[in-house]
Image (cartoon, rainbow, N blue to C red; front, side):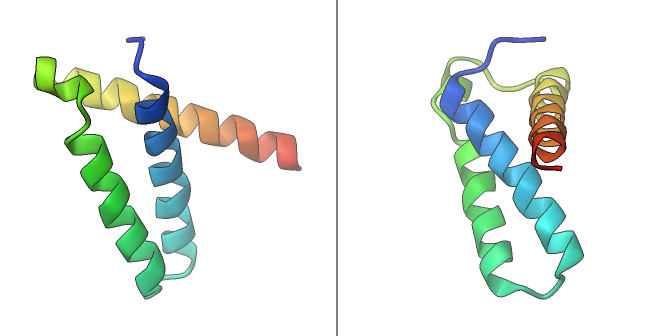
Length: 77
């Protein structure tokens, strides 16, 4: 797994949580707008200015967001 900056990892985690919330409550404009803002943060993050992300790098970041979300969900139960 690649080391990602903390704010990039946090944005991916928030994106994953927001995406799941939107899947549960489709049509929620506020969640769609939040998802767009987070997508913008992820894609245009300064970390990617040094090197454009490969598909593998995107997958690692998404996996990080999913695994972190799963862990936080388990803690709440």
